[in-house]
Length: 111
Image: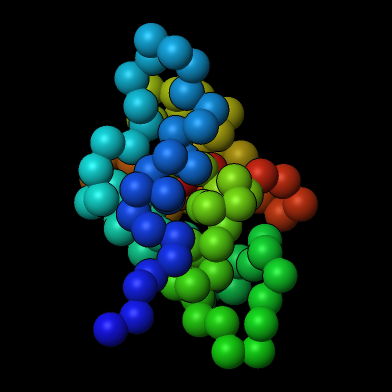
């Protein structure tokens, strides 16, 4: 059986690396990582640009995992969303449960 890389723990650390000491982590469970990567993979399937170097056989979910691990996408807690984010037409936004997935061309992505 092959090991998966990066591991869930590696992804959680990568997503939470911008959290300052004393703040609550953005991602606390594997569930959040699974939901976030699935949402980003759906955006890629729907035509959003891939933000990591693609290989010929890379699937959308693999690209989403790499984007998280390299810090190209992140998860934004719902309380950090602003009114301008919800009305900006340049963004491709999908809201589901308590997290938001955002894609902006040429910039770091937020989930």
